[in-house]
Length: 107
Figure (cartoon, rainbow, N blue to C red):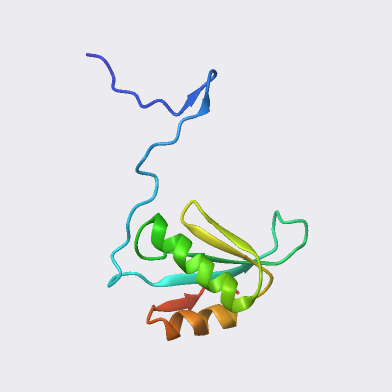
């Protein structure tokens, strides 16, 4: 009986990404988490937001609104929003204003 396999890497094309990498989170069940990170960023601070309800389009829309509100740069990829600098408290306040449930994660 052949074993079913899933191709994850090919020497010809590199890593194989599936279309269903980002699960859509129900807005009623979602609690957005926010943390500050410095690890792996050359000592620079960044604020990471994850568990955002909705799909990739909602993630990009929220990232754009956060960057505009804070006047800083950042990105939205792989289900996370990364904002440059330490902005945990302003992001929590903004998310509360927008009607999201959010909590601070980490120390």
